[in-house]
Amino acid sequence: MDKSSTDNHNNQASYISDFLRMESAGGILLMLAAVLAIICANTPLESIYQLLLSTPVEVRVGALEIAKPLLLWINDGLMAIFFFLVGLELKRELIEGELSDKRNIILPGVGAIGGMLVPAVIYLYFNHGDDIAQQGWAIPAATDIAFALGVLSLLGSRVPTTIKIFLTSLAIFDDIGAILIIAFFYTAKISVTSLIVVACCIPVLMILNRRNVIANSPYILIGIIMWIATLKSGVHATLAGVVMAMFIPMRSKQDPSISPVKIMEHDLHPIVAFFVLPVFAFANAGINLEGVGLSQLAHSVPLGIALGLFFGKQIGIFGLCALVIKLKWVELPKGISWLSLYGTSALCGIGFTMSLFIGSLAFEETGANLLFDERLGIILGSLISGVVGFLILRQSLPKPPQGQ
Image 1: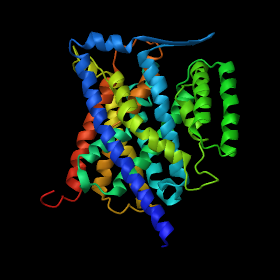
Image 2: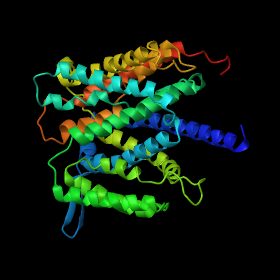
Image 3: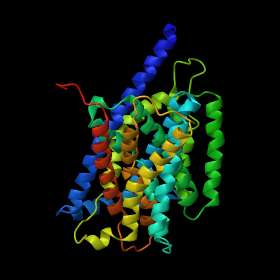
Image 4: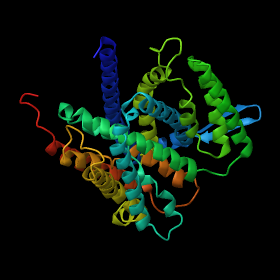
């Protein structure tokens, strides 16, 4: 191997390790934000908490007006930044990362399919015949990569990189599924005029990409216009972030060592990990537990979500991965035992951030007056999955040397 190849390999390894460290730290911060939200919702701070989230925020330029409570600015605006980062990660992984090798795609891809289908089936089984409740079928299909890696970080150096890469790759496919679900199933009344504006933004982004413009500002300007138009169109505004990411150049033609995708990804990671997702968790996880009993927990919606996350993810991911390995389509990755693969599958039942987000699209923004709180099922299913996954991995992974 020549020196340049070695340098590229080392740079890629360093990038992956930096990414995993940041995601793990962000996952721990997510846990703290969720706990803080629940404390606020169940103490005298509740009135201040609710007042903060319902604060009206309005932006007006001439006839153009965007007026939403702070909660929806967080869910529609800040989460667009998160989905933009997801798009950048997806592009990098498919072109130069782990997913550029087709052999690395099969196992996490199959696992992600099973991890979305089986939880949805379990949820629909418990909610058949209820048209309103069935809108939440996609809630248990999501995996929260930051939260899952945060739990993994508690095991320290015992966790092999292959498990982290498998979990991250599976979550990327999971995010692709979530993006498609949002695009096709959770859109409001469509505004053709706004969609025309969105359609006009895409050729401009394409021209910038073809001309290999590597400055951020033109993309950001067009991205803001596209986000506003998408918001007004009825298609969920976060999808504008994914579309915009696809047009950021992977490499500068003048200097191939410069990667606009990686630079923007590097700059956005701390913002998303330490601000966007914790703020989202704080705004959406505040459940008032007063009067919550078995009847609320046994409602078909939170029950279907909790069982979908806990059992559905395990069965879907581990079952389909085991099937393709037994069929010899792929091999069990080095450093991963059958028990640790099962533990990782259980850990994928942590759906927290994405499940809360899809739940807000399925129920909170529909205006339906519901007699349940889907967040109960999300938090319960995620909590049990995290604990069980952690205990299984703690048992299956090699014990650390004495003194560590």
